[in-house]
Length: 430
Ligand code: ATP
Ligand code: MG
Image 1 (cartoon, protein in one colour):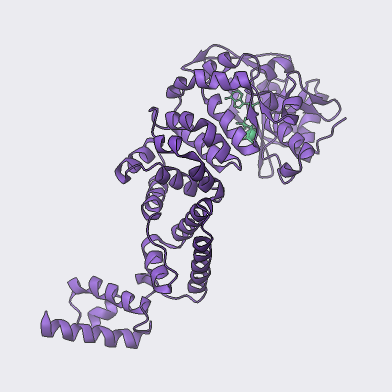
Image 2 (cartoon, protein in one colour):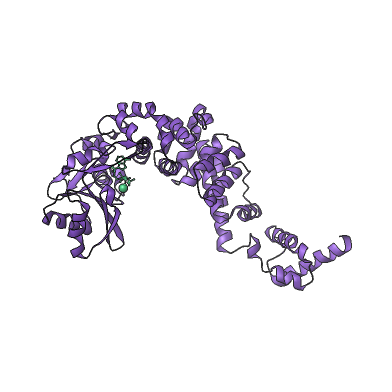
């Protein structure tokens, strides 16, 4: 029998429920991820991030069983049968076996019904690989052959895929997210149903869409998923058919660039939009459509804006852009540029970016100044030596530039002298 090493807390919960004559299994993602680790080397670092438990006990009974064990229970979703157990700092979701009633607006069931049968509960789940359960004494319970699909790297809807996507269109993007994370193929009928029901994505909130798109872009196999489903992603994003039209026509290089980017959504979204040759104004508009927080939106926008600049391996150039972008954004930009050079097969470019990266580290390590706040002088000092208030800003900028160009050093006495010099010139000519 295949054994999953369950965390102690999960065992405690399962045993407690069982002692009170209820069934309890771990279900869904944690079973899938444990099997993946077991079957494929490439997934061995994977550790199930959360352990969900399904039980025949109703929420009130779950609470009655756990409270005497001094486990804190939080009624997170009583209506849907979910109780959260807080042990240490971790939360375990325990959900009563249930089936879903009629779905509204292609997203969520109007009501749910508690049932006593685990198989019925698994039947409401999205994909066969997510519809397996495990009990330490019984082993894997797998009524829809999820284990086999997992072995064959297939994502397949449980039951009739057309019905499943009509019930909840978010599952379309979930399928793409799992494909991108695991490098799986989507089963033929499931794939057909995805394309048939793509329009239903209009019913899904943009916040949910944003989170799924982030997940899709961060997958190791994002390039493969984008190659096949970029139109679905574009449609989910904007409700239009062709926002990534350019990519549809000129895919390979671009998808490679995305795949070479670090597995983070910010650089990948930036390069996706940039390579789609969308104008800057339109880029801002489509970013706003996904309701990113203002800071993230600005970061992505600034990255898109700076991808086409010429990169120069000179400290003064690096400092100038460090000042404009800030350290974090600048580093992300280097990652994007390097990915772009890799996808274009330009080793010289890759070396250049590497060198810029090394110089950047040196600047940081040595605390070399690159922004106004790094200067050994500030507005008060300038006021003291008689610089008029309205000239202070310009003068600080001029000093920073002179320091970056290594014309003067960042010492207060020298900067004051420099300022007095500028002031004298100003009085003479200004
Ligand atoms: P992840 O590792 O991303 O958390 P997961 O499979 O655990 O993957 P969750 O969103 O945490 O995904 O959901 C837990 C389980 O609930 C899934 O494995 C699946 O069985 C079920 N599930 C989640 N969302 C849906 C959905 N929209 N439709 C049907 N079943 C779903
Ligand atoms: Mg999960």
